[in-house]
Length: 153
Image (tube, rainbow, N blue to C red; front, side, top):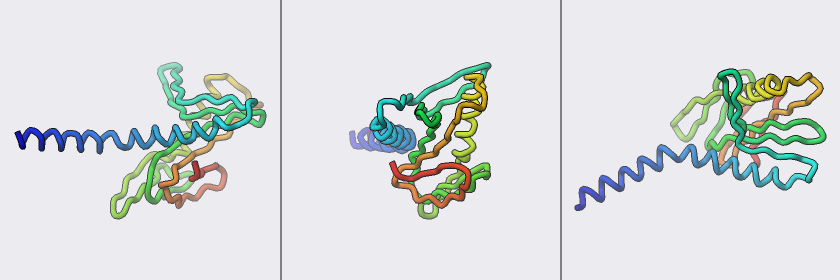
């Protein structure tokens, strides 16, 4: 009986560990959604969109259509130090001595904007404003001059 309980306990712990990044990401997206829902009514908000076209697909966390342009928001639920450069291929998350590389979210979001341009067959008249948002558990050490990367949700 004790062995069965121990096995179930460890199975639950492993399951939670494996699913934790997904939950953090969804939680951070929810926090951003709560903030952008406070915008005035002339702003139209779309959340968690999956687009497919010509065999390609992309998932966009948030799109805000405003009188000033279309904000394309990528949300990251990472904690720890986030190190990266605007044009670098990968960024690094550091938590104590553990390091994890992930694809540059500025480049990821630029891909979202390119996809929207292609999908909407739009001219350069529409201003797309890409934004990358990290939750408050992240300490950003990011060098970006031409893109918006923020920490506060």
